[in-house]
Image (cartoon, rainbow, N blue to C red):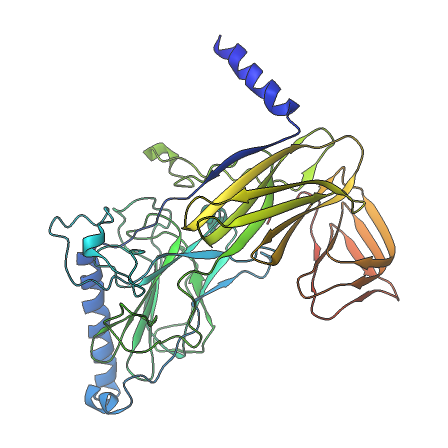
Length: 453
């Protein structure tokens, strides 16, 4: 009976022209408990004071200066090869502004009476002293391909660093985080925790770094429940700084960002295709401990008659937001359209849609998702040809994927939202006459048909 039910389910799945398969919200990430945060703070600030004493710089001298001399840029950048992924991270936790401590010391429960973030919300947990910036979607896949890079948010010198510790924790209970701390010119210290084993910058302590310099790869070392960077700031007076300014920030009066982001920044992080329903699991490599494994099932090269699952992954989506999708044939005609409507406000949300790919219509298909007056694209192939020769005028977003080579003399008429992709395993040749309008996003890469970002 069990075998019969399974076969029947597969039959109806494959007979369906299209269906909404799933939607959901990933779990919230939490990291260091309050006691560990306090211990790390004491250690790193003691090291700072020792360095200043060695340099014969008194804290009093630094206090005479303006209370804020430094501004930070965003401490995360995407790997250059992770293209057409519109954003690789979400904010999973802000600094906790509420000084009232949960008497039960139960940091795993989000109890609103004990937490407030800078905007008077509860996107944090009790005693949290940092911005937690997590890779999403598929943070463990991004861990595997080094997609999320941690960079220095402001110039300074390396105060301390640590490497060599296990980096795939899925729940609290980890030992030591891989991290880098930077001492800035005004005595402020910024720290970047939970990075990948073996990824920490090779620059020694005391080395000067510039804003944007590489520090490591986002991972889950130490007390961590998933891949993210724990970015904390303490000033010369040992005060915790929340770089965001807002109604409920009682720590500092002004922003410490060069360009402060909004509390909610609704956008699509990624559009991609799957061979089957993905699993946004807890872990990657710790299934033996009882955690559900993340299974991306990413696929970009299909055959006629196969099922394609289109995934749309958003950050900071708002209740009642509408996301519209269009699937285009290689010829440019419309295969189908659909919409998703959000029923929640969430820092991370995904929607899945499946299709049975028709016979013929081989070539590069286009997925276009529209959200808040912006278009997001993904390209995949059906019956990927070995080579392509393309010419003539084209308008809008285009994708060309071949197993071996592409030769193009196309004139692309585009706009600032257009995406143009050339992907071939061996060679891409642009002949005289090739043109693309300024402002469009062009990516040419040597990758095979089955390459998945």
